[in-house]
Image (cartoon, rainbow, N blue to C red):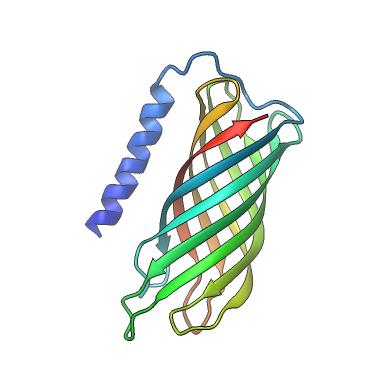
Length: 179
């Protein structure tokens, strides 16, 4: 529990530091712009027998306007388990999201929601596909006109496999590059 609290505290301190720092000549995402990104972080499962895990992912964005965009994400999530027999849970995610940016020049908060397909491999073996939804938000802090630091949190609501839940809360940090 202490590790989880420390990670959450470190995440929010990082967001505050980046938000307060002067970032130079930055620019809000451009209309009709394309971006790619990478994110990594911690995943906190809602299922009690799974332990805090990690996630990695890549994103691709298309900005329909200066405030509305579409994001595709491919991610991987991994958790150890404390259940009898041990084992690990792994899940891949293929997600499509709507993104709303609240404005700003250097620091741009955003909300994100969408759905996608999750493949879940529980400790008991076997793999099952599930559709799920996600909702959350974060902040982009622009270093320059094209590059942004990203901090985000997303709730993933997914039905489980083998009588175990598949939902989680994920905190991620990453970089995004705008073309």
